[in-house]
Length: 59
Image (cartoon, rainbow, N blue to C red):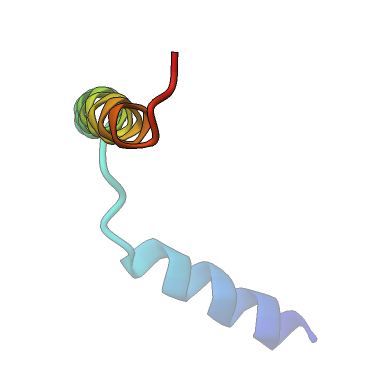
């Protein structure tokens, strides 16, 4: 059992972990893309709902 955990510790040591700055930068990029995509989908939804309402004769 000890060898198993020693092997796990050895393998985890081989991983190239990103530093805090890279992590914050990546997270900021994901948040930015998510906001932009959300705004784009909001615009597309508004356009399609306006077209649908116009075609169906809504108020």
